[in-house]
Amino acid sequence: MNSIINLVPRKLSQGIMDLIIFALSLFAAYFIRFEGAIPDIYLKQITVLLPYIIIARFISFQAFFVYKVVWRYISIPDAVRILKGVLPITAILVIARYFAPDRLAMLRIPISVITLEFLLVILGTAGIRMIRRLSLEATQRESAARRRNFGLYQEALEGLPGIAFMPEAAYGRSNRWLTCVTVEREEFGATREDIRLALEAENIEARPVWKPMHLQPVFASCRRRGGETAAELFDRGLCLPSGSNLGSVDLDRIVMIIRRTGKK
Image 1 (tube, helix red, strand yellow):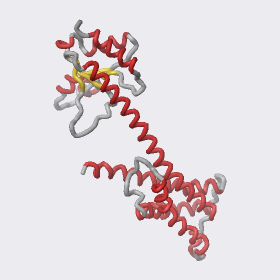
Image 2: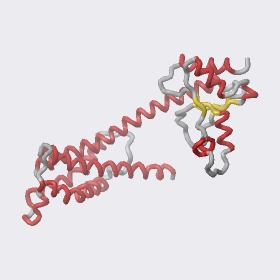
Image 3: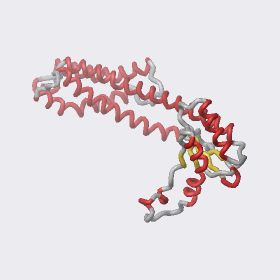
């Protein structure tokens, strides 16, 4: 059920992006054809036909199941599906160009514009999906590196008294974008601020977890409900260096500084 709910926004966002591409492709085709100086008669043609063309293309994409899945990867069959979704409307535009009666002369789009728009729609809709794929792959690589950092920190520090790591929920999988720990002063022998300052002295940046809004001066006079847990986590919580470009040598150095900051 959750996967279905998550797919709806992604399909909706893809549909909205395609509508934008349809609109831009039509305008860009006229712009290229007339070298930036679109005659008034064709500007009027764009204004009149644009809504109908983008809606027709969207319906055609639906009919050919272009939105049946939200792709993580785009393959040749997927590109063929896009082509099938584009061709019918282009064919209609070509037919209207040569056979529309005089009273429907507004439908006679220049064949060069139709050709350019056809190519731009294919390049745009396939290209945006390729960009999503590359972006997803980059995010997955980042997440894998950050999960590796978390695992190395946990292996090196979990046995230290007073150091606890943020747990992973049983119902999901954390990307571990930040490795956060809590520090118990009595058990560890130092505060999270002692660790932060020790790292800073070695030109290594670490930060407290996010400061609750009710503790920030600008919101001090605002009404609030609760906040004690957030304040406690801020007092004890520390975000360790978590960048995906950290190497084993960097992590070993950070761990060594943390260890020597606690009880001897």
